[in-house]
Amino acid sequence: MNHFPVFLALEGRRVLVAGGGDAAVAKLRLLLKTTARITVVAEAPAPEIEAWAAEGKLSLIRRGLEPGDATCCVVAYGAHEDAALDARTLELARADGALVNIVDNLELSQFITPAIVDRDPVVVAIGTEGAAPVLARSIKADLEAALPARLGLLARIGKTFRKAADALPFGAPRRRFWAEYYAEAGPRAAEAGETAVRAALDTLLAEHIAAEARPGHVDLVGAGPGDPELLTLKARNALDRADVVIHDRLVAPAILELARREAILVEAGKEGFGPSTAQDDINAMMVEHGLKGSHVVRLKAGDPTVFGRLDEEIEALEDAGLSWSIVPGITAASAAVAGIGQSLTKRGRNGSVHLLTGHDVKGFADQDWRALAEPGAVAAIYMGKRAARWMQGRLLMHGGRPATPVTIVENASRPDQQVRAATLATLPDALTDIEGPAVLLLGLAPRAAVEAIANREIAL
Ligand code: SAH
Image (cartoon, rainbow, N blue to C red; front, side, top):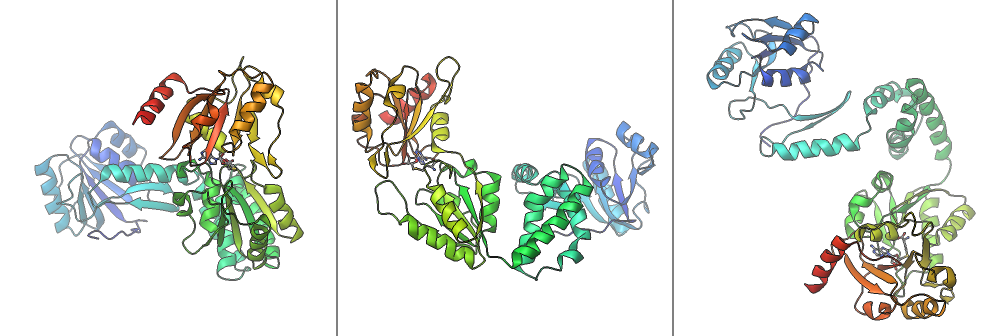
């Protein structure tokens, strides 16, 4: 690390900008956010600078830089965009004792200005020591999206509440309180303004003080179909705060990576017909960790409310007196239709869509085959590989046309996603070498362009 990041106290201190063109204006836009006393020395200042001077936001000296201009300045910027003039700025301002930055010139600069994400008083500074400005900009864009717009307001109000929060025990309880304030209660209340945020803090503190006497909490979280970018922000936040993560085998490793470093990860394998952990054992595990006061994340593939045996888990939690909440996720059917460029419902084709399972506790699952065999019917069939031949028979028996499209989407949204276009007639055979999790989309064929890509993939 060649450049050490610091946050400089600028209140009442002087900052000099030498130059009056675009580079100077860009720097001034940043500097004007601070409490510094700004002086601009420029022979031909841009209209923006003239306007700021007229509004009293900075002092403007209309001439070239002279010795003594940077006296008492903490930092000075050479923003002439002219090598000779900037070199002179460096020499004069240094002599006056200021730290100097020459815009876009890493070699000559004694300090560099980072890319900034501003949620004052929360400020994130991103620097790459000049190595990758594009990367800095993309990290900035990610952070801009990730940090709530009103984080600054929340932090300012939060600061005034620190004493009150001392009522909670030091360590994890206090950390949990602040984490919930910044992630959920605060942003929600901020929509309604400052008074609402203060009220929300009071309520939240009362809740946390009461919860201290109670056991932990279980979040039943949807991990989505596999692509980590398809996680919800809520799911990410829950993983970030988890003490224990109990996950299905189907949950992709890249998603487990996002769990808090100290979290205990437990695999509760439930995968089609493979070896699996009994539901009772999963329930017992959640309850055991919850009663110890842990924040448990029960991480389930796709959406937890779709073929996830969610109700059994909720009942177990309620029986144990544990609090719980559901964080929805993107279900495999949504990822699968996205993968073939189609939609689940379409005007004039189907006004309803069926989510089916190929097998249930009793074996192959019976369905309303007559409705499913109707022209235009669309169904997303989960866990359908083993039951495919049986379902084919049922559908044909109830009048389904053999040419009805059925598209198999294996590993939807993952790098190894595979799309295979079949028909009701060819269905069981088209599945023979499909090994990963797959959704069968009855009534949908890949859109032409997607089909071309899929065929190429199959040909390769
Ligand atoms: N709750 C999950 C479904 C669990 S049942 C969800 O909402 O997606 C397990 C079945 O989901 C698998 O047998 C398979 O049919 C389907 N599935 C899960 N992830 C999948 C993926 N990435 N691609 C295709 N099918 C998937």
